[in-house]
Length: 446
Image (cartoon, rainbow, N blue to C red; front, top):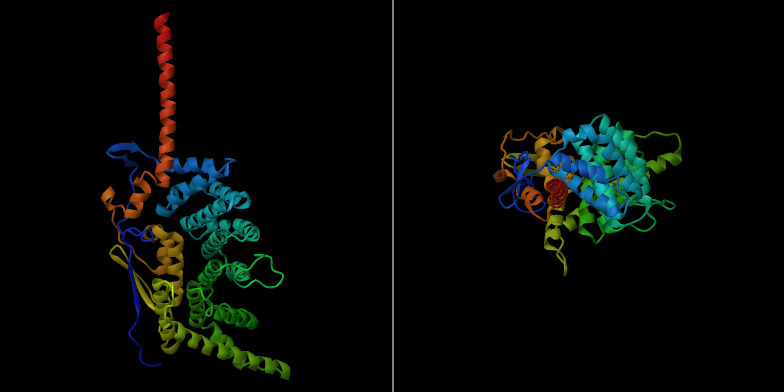
């Protein structure tokens, strides 16, 4: 196979102040007694706050539902709401689906993300299967209702997550992948998106498609479908958008890692048919696949050393170079990239393209809540073979900077909702006091 080059490793530590980073491994269960304004202690019941947000999803005003979804998103992203889900699972799911059917683009974005977070919270099982079964039609219809990038991207991410967790067999996974592929490469007559999708939409669709492909080991699509997929993904490597190139490169690397293309070629070479015409078609397919593999290798070599042009992002350029260097090493020597991410004091490692694609997708979807979910979700721990630290630290000093901003900042979604709740309680209290004063005055006058 040849001598292995020095392995390029990516190391990330999730303990920084960056919004995309997350909590350390000691990320705690926040107490219900939290300091809100300076040293003032106010009792804050997070569960009742989410309950009120659920009730607000029944309101007619769209802006009210949007604010409620923001509160629910924040709660589910940074704290796994197991107990809440047991009691309100069906209500939350169906109200979110109603938001997707009738809401604005912003509301659809928030509702689709909430459904994805709900699936991650319940994990594999009956509830996750119900989420997928109930959501697939509304999501498909929402793809047809407009082409706004933020909405389509949120719907794609939602579809990927709920399929990854709730699919009951390869047929359901393939159905979701076909929806995504229609967005990546709309065929004539397809009405998934009426106009040509933007670069961010294609990038997200390719990433979502690859994310689901990681679960399809042993999948045997038709030779025509493989050839179409590889041909089109290869064409995306020539696109000007670097994020799209990276997504397409990861997808192609995964296809080679799974061995699906090689198996297809082997089946093609060993194909015996009495028809001379079929035999010629088989030889043509074999030659075409071999040509695509050689083309991918050359493209990866060029992209791994591409020079930066005027106005190009240095970060994006470095990401592209590093990724395609990994692709080159994989294609030439057979070694996939190894990455290490520290969550607190524990390392989460990936050793295959499949694991790396899963990790990158879930990090993007969960954002600052990724480490928290890795600490508490048995499902994600099983996916990555990760064993977290087991500490029971409770207190403000051990809350991540992201969580501090979420719960402590006066401008945070949670604090705004909490302020509204407290104002409501004060108004009710003042009303009772006024009533009591009136009664007392009346009594004295008598």
